[in-house]
Length: 83
Image (tube, rainbow, N blue to C red; front, top):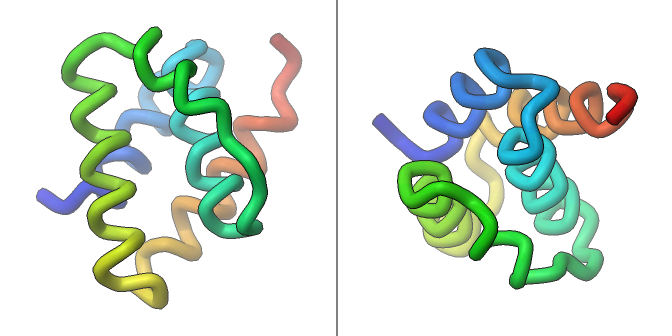
């Protein structure tokens, strides 16, 4: 399964979790070309950290991947949830 799909499934399953918020912030930073605090990745559990690293790899390889738009939309929604 590709990282974008994995991240989307993780965020849908855990929208209020800190890990989902971190993944969403990473996606938003990549999409909008803004800063992201890399130290936040080290707070993730290993499985989620690996998803984040795979997102970075996929984003670099294929910046215009169609599934990215769905993940970006979901990330915007999760970022708007109260903490």
